[in-house]
Length: 80
Image 1: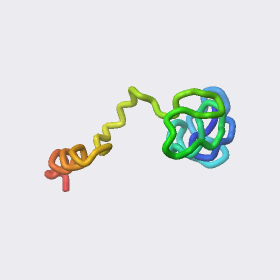
Image 2: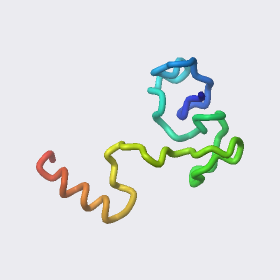
Image 3: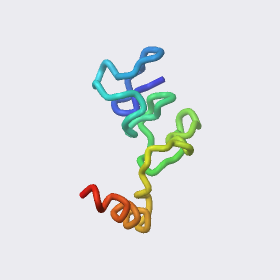
């Protein structure tokens, strides 16, 4: 497995990249499977053919569209 932030190879079971200090799974600059630098708009890595973004990730972010951004603002209004 490779760091999504810097592209360096990770040790098995690592929680943090020893090269850049970023948590494993954070970032999207490099393919987490092969370490190649993909096109920023790509959803599949051209080097290894695997999916770059997890389709079932539950990050809690709905801000992929304008409606999602508006909805997120209203949901977090009391927090602000």
